[in-house]
Structure formats: C-alpha cells, structure tokens
Image 1: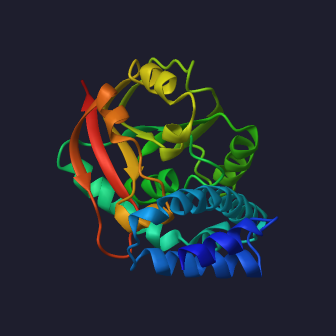
Image 2: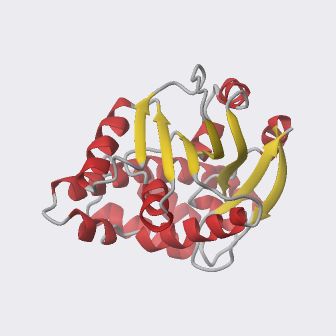
Length: 248
C-alpha cells in the first residue's frame, strides 16, 4: 500500500482539493490511522509526508477562501473537513496545559492560511493570540479569514521572519509549527525564539505510523533548546501527538 500511495501521489500535478486528491488523502488518512509498516519503507514514507505537506497547504488555502467568500462564514468553518480533528486536538492540548498554567495569550510561529487552532482557542476559551508567518500569501488569506469570522480583537497576524523576530510582550504559551523543524534555518529560528518571553512551548509531532501524514520532529534538536515536560500520543481519532516544554 505504501508503494500504491507513493505512485499515485507522484503523478499529481495539482494538490488542491478535487476528486483525485480528496480520494487519495482520505484513503491515506484511514490507512495511516490503523497500519504499521516495515523499516525498509521509511524512505517512501518520508516522500509521502512531503506530499502531505503540500496538500495540507493547498487544502487550507482552498477552505480558507471558501469561508471568506461564504455568506455564512461560521457555518462554512464547521464544514471544514478536519474541523473535528482540530477541535479534539486543541481541546486536549488546552486541558493538558491547564494543569500547569493558566493560558490567556499565545504566540504562534508559522501557521499557514487557516489558523484553526487560534480560532478555536479564541471562540471557545477567549484566548488572544499573535501569529507570525513568513509566507505573504498565508498571511494575506488568514487576515481576511479572521475578519470574516469577526475575531480581530482576539487574533493578530503579521508577516515576519522568525529568524529575526523581536517581541517584548509576555506570552503564556508559544506554539511552534512542525514546519519549523523541516526548515534549513531551524536552529537559527529556535535560537531566536528562545529570546522571547513565554512560559511554555508546544510543538506538534506524530507517533509511529501516523508519520505518514505528519512528520515527527527532531527531538534531539528540540532538547538543545528546551526541556520537555510532557509528551502526549493520542490513540483515538486525533492524528497529532504534541510535546509541552519549557526553556532550559
């Protein structure tokens, strides 16, 4: 099956949502949630993971634009195909973090066109957040999305390079997207981020066969900058694992 998915994905010229991509990634999600594979297949697993990253960006962009253009943005948000997964994951993260600290404001590093976590935290828990992203298109789309949902008072989005980003505010939590760990500039980004004032850092990752969908981050690199306090590997419908850490 790994070869089957790899061959289909390699033939794709367009990763935006349409019949072919929807079928492939729907089947891939089901497969990854219930399957293990042999070690010799890891090279193709990593390749599939890169395809998933491209698809996720295009999917977020597609649905974000649908929400923006909708006459009922709230309803269209709920129709996002992975809304329930994000809701369950965000709730689980929030409940775990709440055992350690009262979370009121968050900094997000690299969050793409549909910042659903910050939206859920704003709508459900009244948490304010600031999002920085280096991608102009993602920033432009997500700004319009936040306006369409009427969340401007809770979510601030800016075009910024995390390597040079400076911030004098104090944050309870910093979310760092796993994409940061795929960047060639990862160490420079992390060395700059630790200068910002925050209590905890949360990074999403994946466990074992779910790495097909979401790449596992480099734990040794993370340990160079932070002390890991909690690792959670859900065994239900939630795709992601997450790691809660503090500064050294």
